[in-house]
Image (tube, rainbow, N blue to C red; front, side, top):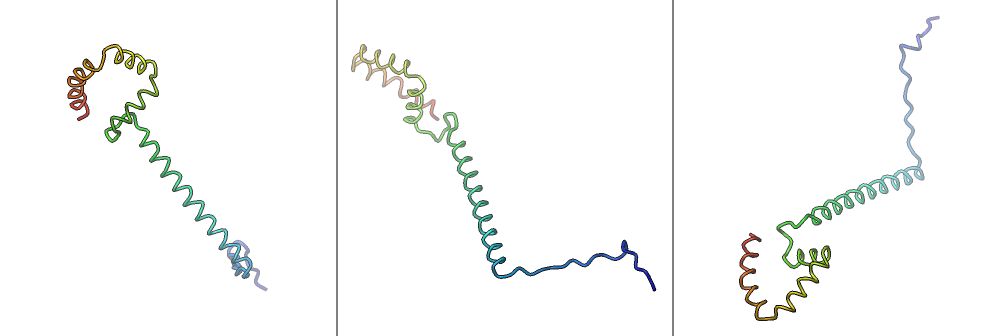
Length: 109
């Protein structure tokens, strides 16, 4: 009788086919994994977009948005400027606006 060496023979892998109920569960798991992957990708994309939009005064931000951000960060400075504007009067404000606006437009470029 010839003895077979167990180390030389590879065990045969038994492949079992899932039943219909098991296959439905496996399909639901696969769909859930795909939904989770899509949700993670969408969240990562929205976070990246939000970080890009939070830039520190990028060129794509309008002057109004930057002014609103400055007002929110420095309320005392805005109050002081408003006080100076009230004291100066409308005629001086218009004259200074004629000087400052061209300077601001050049800086914006």
